[in-house]
Length: 174
Length: 236
Image 1 (cartoon, rainbow over the protein chains, first blue to last red):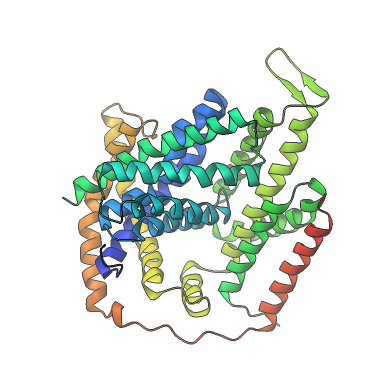
Image 2 (image 1 turned 30 degrees about the vertical axis):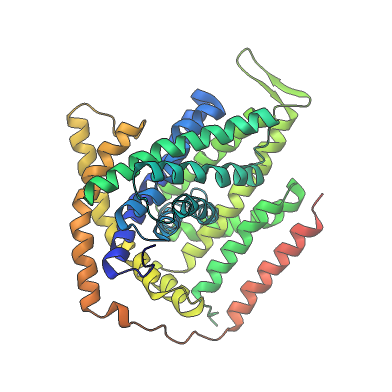
């Protein structure tokens, strides 16, 4: 287990990942709405949801310390809220829960793995609270099969984009 | 007389109001807080955010709410029937409910953004809500980096367009090809920014004493409680 103490450089890196993810989160709103019209709810989740989960694997693969995943996602959502509040402050609630779920992805490896696989697991886990909060806020509730499909789509998308974000982070911090 | 309030109170207000959107299950329970916060928020938000952004936010949310209704709540009596689409009662009800929720959360957030500036808000979160100085530094630094990163991103977009690629992220490969140059540029900047902050004594920074609650803060909390009571009494 590594130290949880963040150095100033870690905090500055967290800021960078926060801005990058915040900008991508903001752009994803348009992509989601367009893809939902063209590809339906499952297609839209596969295409776009993972982009909303990249804050955690990106920060974790760059900083490689406990809670970096949680903070990366949370700060990204805060930046998104403050630059273009498409989802208002609920973005922070989403960021908080998705960040916790992604953190779990690194915790299950006892903070010993920061590779592409753990990034994919962290991204996939963030899909669970995202779909659950959608049900609460937007009334996106279907039958068991539909709900299962939406969870699966969000998790698959999270795993793909989580793996990509991790590989980018790892290639920068060799 | 000008009412004084802590910026963190507005943050708590926006968060508290947004939670109403999660518990409201009928139009009746949400309409009053939505209209109040939406109208005040969008009026104040015009001073801080560009008009184009606010209009596009509204259109985006309305479109999202309509699609949401069409996919997930298309049941009940038929209201409009065309060869392309059939719109039933449930769509209209869901559209109104989700639009009001959006109006509520975006309105409350715009209200907060309209009455504060970013620097004071972060200072207040650190001083009054005791968020750690490290996190406060991260958020402040993120906003300082924002214009630089926006410029970097627009340059990445220009070079992508010149090579005939899309500037939108449509698949994981697009994401990778945008993230790599953006983070490559920012990594060195962040390392030296962190070293510079440390040399200026970031780790020795202590949280200042918080401001005491003023009449303005109490008025904001009263408004929050009142809207919660109204929403709870109208729950079906």
